[in-house]
Image 1: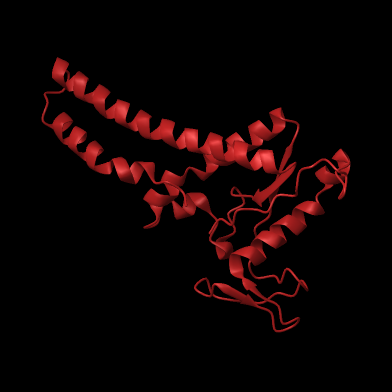
Image 2: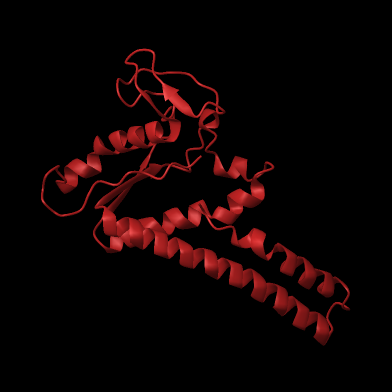
Length: 196
């Protein structure tokens, strides 16, 4: 689970902002209150960034290559348009998770370590069967993938994770770097963390 640092600090922020609204704009006390609000926001941002750094380090210690959905593509039917989601009733949770910041940190740290991250087109990752490749339409509330073609039954998120991994394996970056199975590097292939 992703810690919700902003939600946890909302009451404190509300108190500080209420105090700020009671001060005369431009006064010394007003400036002091502005600094207190900014300090609280910075605390939240620092905690979130620390969590992202630790999570990125953990993932990179377990895998040479990490595949994830391309959050920038924003496929409407996949509900992965982060900017669009940030305008819905989920806005606080979406912004609190800081997906964009995490993916940036992960990509930079991977590059510095000589590792790779691969952004995969999220279209139909949860609809396509990871076993036979046939498309199996399902509503978002259906959490189990049941393929009528090959009879595989698997959690919807695991199905999507396998599809993301399979798409990344066929990615040209892997071929260019010469990453092969069974190279004996001691690191496993990454299983993606399903996003949504």
